[in-house]
Amino acid sequence: MADRPEGCFAHEIRVTWGDCDPAKIVYTGRIPWFALDAINAWWETHVGEGWYQFEIDRNLGTPFVHMSLDFRRPITPRHRLICHTWPEALGATSITFRVEAEQDGTLCFEGRFVCVFTVADAFTKTAPPQDIRDIVTPHLPQG
Amino acid sequence: MADRPEGCFAHEIRVTWGDCDPAKIVYTGRIPWFALDAINAWWETHVGEGWYQFEIDRNLGTPFVHMSLDFRRPITPRHRLICHTWPEALGATSITFRVEAEQDGTLCFEGRFVCVFTVADAFTKTAPPQDIRDIVTPHLPQG
Amino acid sequence: MADRPEGCFAHEIRVTWGDCDPAKIVYTGRIPWFALDAINAWWETHVGEGWYQFEIDRNLGTPFVHMSLDFRRPITPRHRLICHTWPEALGATSITFRVEAEQDGTLCFEGRFVCVFTVADAFTKTAPPQDIRDIVTPHLPQG
Amino acid sequence: MADRPEGCFAHEIRVTWGDCDPAKIVYTGRIPWFALDAINAWWETHVGEGWYQFEIDRNLGTPFVHMSLDFRRPITPRHRLICHTWPEALGATSITFRVEAEQDGTLCFEGRFVCVFTVADAFTKTAPPQDIRDIVTPHLPQG
Image (tube, rainbow over all chains, first blue to last red; front, side, top):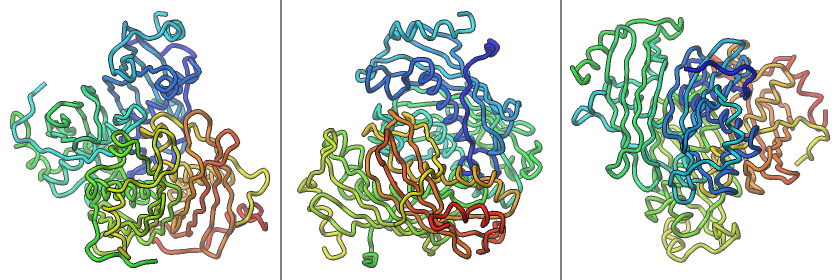
């Protein structure tokens, strides 16, 4: 796996009481949700549009076809959760994101997420628009 | 990957409007939550206790250390989601679950989930209690 | 407030570990979600369609304009949550639902929910379709 | 109802795709969750502790006994949701919060939320600690 690029995008999450289960740590079911928030924030920050604008304004979907996560340390509301997020690969019709999430400098979880680009209303694969390709490419580890 | 055992446990989920996003399909962030509900229901059905009773009544935790999911088809509220769920492996201090979820006979997602057994209040690894080992073992593919 | 009609619709919810917060009871933020699930299940059971089918198949929306809830007892995964649910009033363009939710015979929360009927894609108020009016009316306390 | 105090606390929420339902607006079930996030943020900002720290570090609970919300306008990811949040009343063992949430200068929902103070592990009512009373009082409309 490629290392995290230096200075890559960081999305901050305010973890709360309601995210936690009776073990006093964030419920596992919430964690992929956090990662998705970070990926959507990556798009919003770099393209100026997130999944909502992609779908409604561009008829562009990016549904997930795969995710895998490793949980390293419990997450609590004691610290903000910093989600380091970057695109790892851009294929002909797909994109892979990585997320490494830390609290107080310690890795809590890391994950890999693969999305395909689709014509949203037809739900068929498509190549990503050129402007998106141009924005993503310099952020790729080998970019 | 081992095939799904015949007649394995099936947990039924009533998918609703509120689970869906503007693409009119279940939001990806909800899907791991569904899988976890199925795994917890496996415990409730086979042991008579779920994660809540494990933690509160037995001081036994089963935190997740890994999950991976492949998303095959969109999920909608048109059909119940049937989550076929079984333990794939039982280690010295860990257990692996598989979930294959179908709607109307078509595979929607499949996933693998690894949990470790812990002394809940100490958050340290432990071997699973013997009664749990005895209940899980016959459900293993090679059991 | 009108009393709960005898034999009114009951929607059963399987409360889980992930619904609970570190106080070992269901997080308050989850409870309106449960009530909405019960109301949607009322529609599915009585009309054969829920919010998803209303919107997609009929272009009919029923957005909420008000909800109020009183929380009487904590909810836990120890028992199923039985949500007694009924329409209390049907206006020219609105409907009021009541939900009384019990665990083990004890009232946990009660709420009132007001929705308006809309032309979904125009987001304008409308009268409910006659078939829905005919289905709802006999279930009203004064019906 | 008392008017919103000038310059009262505002909690900003980044509304996302995953918060929305197929009507392309935030699902009603998510909205009380947003309001609770705003109230918890009020505590974090003014006391330096939220519900998590109250419960774990002080054995202090503030469970909700009532909430009521009026939904004025749909919420979308097009704008941040600004949740104006203030304590409206402080009783012997209870506190009432108000939330008025706006997008792009337009009121989207408003709500009133009543919590009681409890000894968390005993789940019995109690008076709020004096430091909390001292912090809350000047923020009351009549303070």
